[in-house]
Image 1: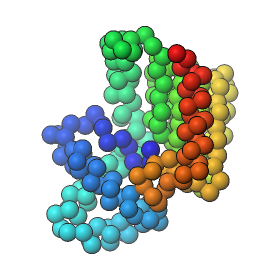
Image 2: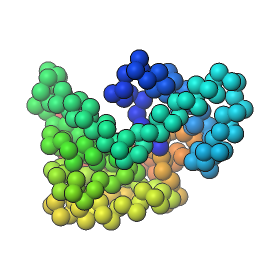
Image 3: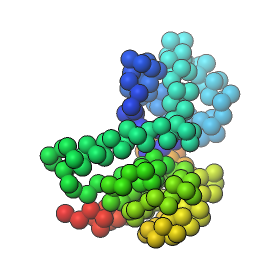
Length: 215
């Protein structure tokens, strides 16, 4: 988990070649090797791209904006529909999981899914954007959330998240890790990964899921 949306997306590669799996993997590998200050600076990213061989730079330069489009509020919400379809597939169609409890784990999409899909029994959120106050009224499952103390932009939404879930009478447990920033759980991006925060968050996540999804 990190700054970028999942590789698997509802966009078909033949419709948008820039989002083909191998192209996204290539772009994420490039971005994961950049210092955090460069990663969020468009001009610095372009300078880093210019040092790559031209064909590679062109491919990555085309894929980065396509991927970043999914990190906006509108982009994230465009993925809720496909995720709801996936939940329904697990709940109603897959013989291995039919009728069993379902949970979601992710960034802001995990929270959005819990707002728009009644089936999940639990949701875990890693440093994701907070849904709107109106959306939060529809949540019907407990939430656990993990944040890096240095992720000020995202952390501005914690109080609203807690207030909204309290108003919806839904349990909300959240943890803030000192010294960690956005993407601290993503061990593929050294600029962001924080092993201490990740280990603690993973242990808490497992305990949360064991309680929410009893065998």
